[in-house]
Length: 244
Image (cartoon, rainbow, N blue to C red; front, side, top):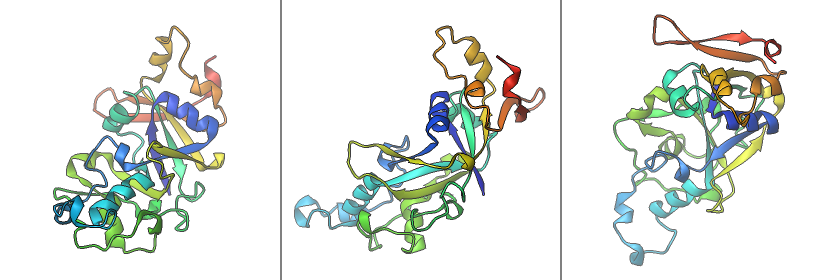
């Protein structure tokens, strides 16, 4: 399955240089509700009325610090995604083969790419009645509905993202916001450069931006452009040897 990851230009260059993808802890997401299912009943009991770490509220807190999420999408030509995650159309998108990248392995991943469709709702999920495992015990074999409530529910406001998620265990150290994992170079099937990519390079008087089209010619590169009559983006194959 092909999925897509939007990123800044610097992030794109680092990804292609190091062949890594980043799993971020939910506590560091831009949406504070992300992976934060309701657990109000147990939270209301107060810290002094229970053993620390024993309630679902406690477990949920540690899960959000110990499980990393790789956020992907179905569409490399979403104008809103380019504006929000593609550095205002100056960044890039990589196309990833989930099998080759190890994103379908249920031993490595708690939620694999093929099982990671985000569920957009108007109601926040609750784990009040779930028996949550400790963060180090969660596996892909746990109850599917519980895993969905923990990792896949998101507010309807975010539905434009068409998100697919992969979840796996990461370094629990609170000061570590994310963890990068290496993937084979062959798992990156294409690179899309934003519609403002070349204009950003032209304005880069200090020569600080990476020239991705020159540094990574072995990848299949597409250049995005705006439709002249609609609100759509299109992409066409780009020959990186055409500009020096």
